[in-house]
Amino acid sequence: MSRLVMWNLITLDGYFEGPKPWDLAFHNTVWGEELERFSIEQLQGADRLVFGRRTYEGMAAYWQTAEGDEGDVAGFMNGLPKVVCSRTLQRADWRNTTLVKGDAAAAVAELKQHGKGESLVFGSADLSATLIAHGLFDEYRICVAPVILGSGTALFGRGLEMKTLTLLESRTLTNGAVILRYEPSRQA
Image (cartoon, rainbow, N blue to C red):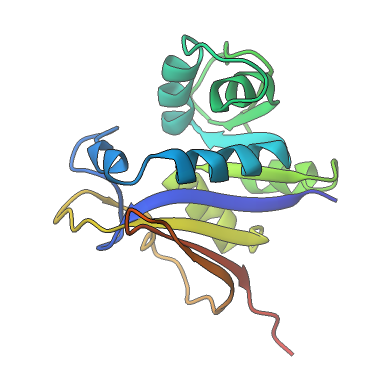
């Protein structure tokens, strides 16, 4: 069975993008050799990537033209199977992409039944809120950038109910970023 893992970079004040769509300048404060190595490790264990429409469109626009080979981020991003959940997208042209137009939670629950690695959800705050509400995430991986942005799009807070999590790991990078890994707490 595949594990569903959220992966996001956020600011200390909880934003995953700035005031405008794809305003990700704060990523430059934490990107470097350590985070690249961590990203490759994650991608090596992935069966697939899962996106909402807006994240898919931005990722596809960037990665389809990025050059790389099998062992680097570009190689993994272009080579891995991808799923995009969207009611409005008419087609998905990025190589190895399946378009899900119906119930995203049901489709992702079905995907989890296939594969042995991880299904990674990047960005995709609206889709993530749906998957959180349905209890589908097996792990939350968040890289907290040492930045206070002041405004932007919050990753969490879309009418979600409280969820208790258990810390699996915290890893401090030399640039001051912290990677946090959590799993949903198991209620007795």
